[in-house]
Length: 81
Image (cartoon, rainbow, N blue to C red; front, side, top):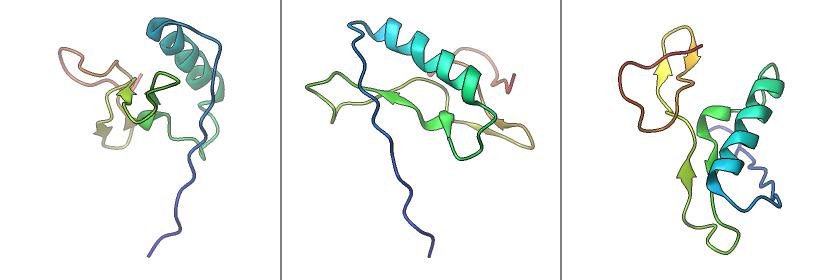
């Protein structure tokens, strides 16, 4: 049995999903070197509807390359970089 993982909920003052996606992308790009953060499972939610989460990126694992870095629901093949 593995230890439970912890989730960090990071509220923002942003008022659009696109703005929150841009911020999530900037955080991923600047903190991607920290192996304790799994950006592949990043989701967004409205402040008052946190139970309804929207994935930011495709969550597919790519052999030897981590996870796909394209937006959720993308067309075409997955890419790691």
